Image (cartoon, rainbow, N blue to C red; front, side):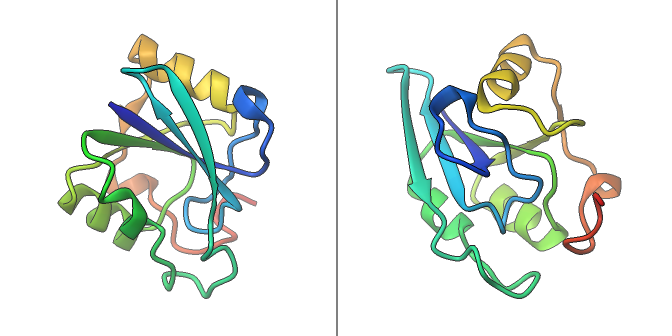
Length: 123
């Protein structure tokens, strides 16, 4: 399984999660089967709210989930249509912490009440 996590920095497992999926400068792709980590650059980092499509890249990953703190409705629906489950963290953690919470089963799938309506929704 591939676990996708939006990041603010490229610091390996210590990378801080980004508050928003679409405006994250980087994405971690953790392959839990072969225990590998790849961090990629988000080419859509500068965009108008709702106008980025980083999820297009993730459609090619196969069996995958997204762990995030903030994400808007359109992105959630698009990811879910691709078969990517979206789990929400209640705090912005490091990549390592988010992965641990997911492995423990303490993260829950996102609900409509938890989606963002704009980039200032967590400030």
